Length: 129
Image (cartoon, helix red, strand yellow):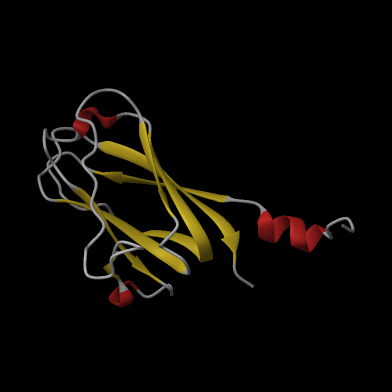
């Protein structure tokens, strides 16, 4: 395999963007990755702000226009909205979203309000174009 050019190396490097679900809220602000990516990883360094038995979901968009945000569905079951139950402790957790293919924007959504702010990081892998 030939060595990568500087442009190829930049296109393959993951991008990190920070976000948060504020205390008493159910949705995060929209996180813009600045380009579309093939896979996203959500890292939550401290899950203590999640209410017990809350369910985490996501809305994604392939462009920079928040009007295009749509619920993220399960990869193997396109009729089921993606949802996870995060731990309600001070441990960290992360989720890999391979089915968010082609997403530029993401908003995390909960079905119950947070009891404290929940900061997170979105990592985009495999930038398009």
